[in-house]
Length: 66
Image (cartoon, rainbow, N blue to C red):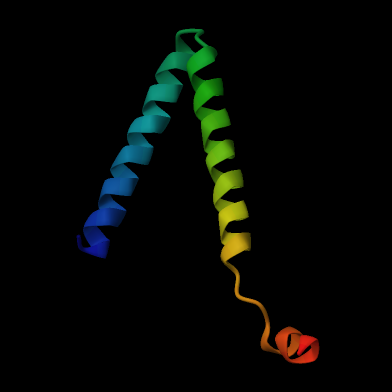
């Protein structure tokens, strides 16, 4: 899929999510926006941990060990 199409799809999905959360907040429902926020924070935490595990070892550190 083209990068531009992915970006447009992401913008569309995030806009829909913000509108949905705003609608629920306006009606006094706090469960859905809190759930959406916690899922987003959890995703970022897992993604950062995965990226940290994939980071390559610096060349200087491997040369000193051998």
